[in-house]
Amino acid sequence: MVNYDPSARLPSSKELPDSDDTPVDNQLQKSIPDLLRSVLAMAWAERMDWFFGIRMGIYYDPDLPPIVPDGFLSLGVERFYDENLRPSYVLWEEKKLPILVLEVVSHNYRGEYSTKKAEYAKLGILYYVVYNPLRRRKPRLEVYKLINGGYVILENTHPAWLPEIGLGIGIERGTYIGIPREWLYWYNQQGERLLTPEEQAKEAKQEAQQAQRRTQLLLEQLRSLGIDPDSLT
Image: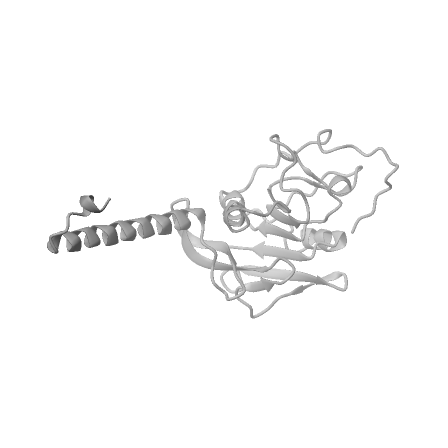
């Protein structure tokens, strides 16, 4: 963990730029972390001790520009401060490193397997996740864990179980925001994929329709027995 002098007059999150103004190279760099965040928002709806940032600056040194991963997860922090939300993630305010950072590789390579990886390791971020949809011969998803100051890849595990988070992460074909393709998902300890909000809504609709059909069948059975269902109310 990076240490800071509590007596130093360091800038606050409201005084710092909230991004590096670098546009994403493709839609996946926003959509993939957005899916992960939306699933967490459903799975952890009652929890207020986590935060998932997307393309948000992480300030770790007041004299340096922030690092801006495609996505990151922090635990043990406030989910939100007020209705204006966080403009950026400032370590000397949060006092908690993100536990996981995510990078989605695009056509424009940005050092995801070299400089960024080394930077996150130096900061002490426990998990580093890299997804490269363009790979064909090497794994598209790589999950690294920080061990003795260096990242070690978690091999031969799908989904990769992250005990400190209490979830697994992996890739699977599915449909999100109407787009069928391979996506990153969260998984429970039994290896079952957590549903997206769209899937949960669809499942709830199907259950409601089934309940309605069962009710209709019961009413028809009562009528066949000469019983008026309205007389029972």
